[in-house]
Length: 94
Image (cartoon, rainbow, N blue to C red; front, side, top):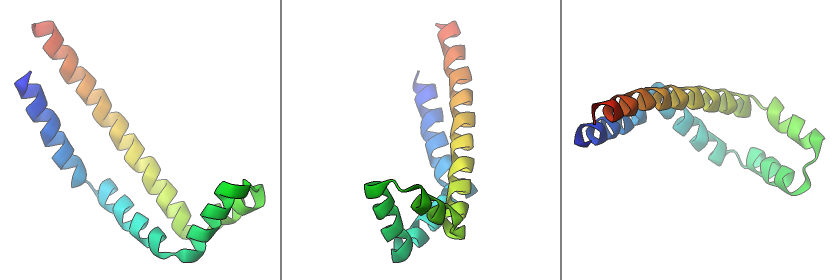
């Protein structure tokens, strides 16, 4: 079990160093600096206007962020799959 925890901690550290995580952090910083985009997002949260949603999705920075978010989610799914395989192996050895 201790070996499993060590592997999980190692994976967490490795995840922080992936291009996907670095990219999403960079884009997140850029979005936080874009006051116009932030205002549109906040307004959309309040109104749920479809036209405003389209405006937000037409902004290239937001598109890039959503793409990076998808890439990161795929990476997380891959890691989860590997963790399940590792943990199921340990259960068989008990």
